[in-house]
Image (cartoon, rainbow, N blue to C red; front, top):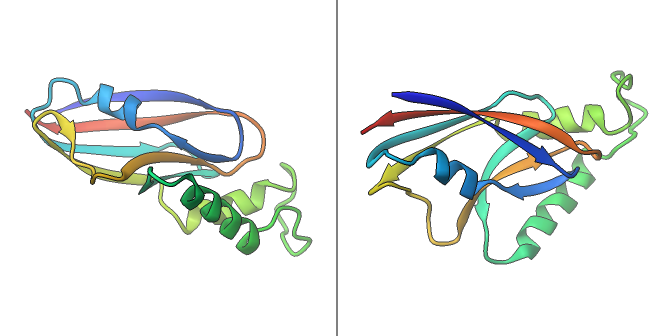
Length: 135
């Protein structure tokens, strides 16, 4: 078993492909599991399609409709109009993922990638704990 932490800079809101960084972290594991845990409450992790960029745009548009910035009904407003919507978006997605490793590669499907979904509008530095089990 081994553990490391990825430190990832995001340019702001959006789905950011981190598959390459995670694949680099699994180096040396032939068969096993890669568990990812995001240490934040206003971003999330997703496995999603990487072929058609419209999928990502449609997801972002959908989240904007269900958790709009600046909703006056939100009590938590101290960190800006995008903060509470970011917590809502994180609550309905995930902050952890487990992906099999097969023959030294993440066992993702043909059109799948791992995304860090930044929910805040400004740039942030995010930390993902990567735990590898296997050999």
